[in-house]
Length: 331
Image 1: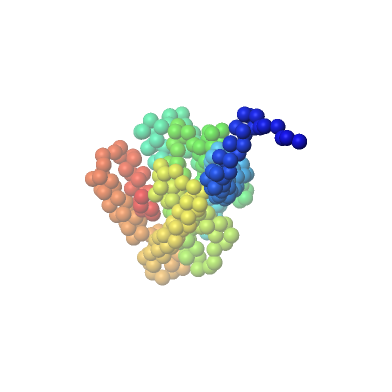
Image 2: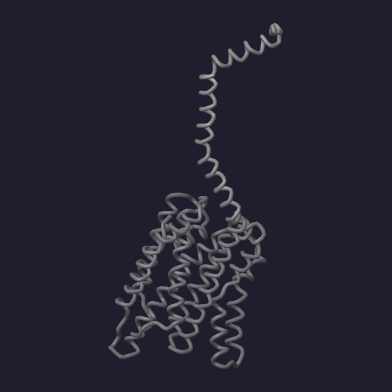
């Protein structure tokens, strides 16, 4: 039998197949490159997928901000309670009213300075002064006007060193996970951490040195919490206005701890070595009055104030607060 002649359509298909066969190496190269690109993109895709999973597991910025504020509030509140217990112990148990009064002063003065600075800058109102005065007035009034048992007297004196400011700031900033501008921002924590924290730690260590005995649990807790709050505040003050990751916060805090601890221990040791001895009696050996270390701190304060006033003009309350803060930490 004779085979039918191919149609024009069959001839066109055969010519197309022959053309594809002739260009098949080029097609294979393109397909190979596509496969290699897919293989190269697999690690990138895996990395992107893992990053998405980590981002989904890790809390968002609001949750991280809330956790940071909650931690700061707990540290400051426990630090205030421990300082109050030490204050009550110095006044009622050890009968050192001068040293106890100095401890109460270094707790209250930073709050007054911070409020004055914020009020002068228009960042707070006069009605918010209750945050500074409520607990001290309540504690001193209860202790002075009521006939209380020794336990209630200790509670009344301990209240005077507790500030509600951290709780108020936590309530104001809980919704957005950050402190609003009208709360004073980080200045409350910096002032309490870099003025009240180191001063209370110095006085507590000085009292422990005068007793010639290991510190009790309340004294030890007050010292450790002061170290933590001071180091944290020093890190925030040194990196003010910078956005950092959690690891950078932790590293910055750990880097501040040695400087803060050594500075506080040095000042407490200096106060103990330069204490007035009097005639050698037991009361004079345990004298709670020390003027030399006060002169050293005032001299440092005056130097910082002169430096700040020469660098930039600012309100007197502002440079007074910064001068006091810079005794422990320099930005």
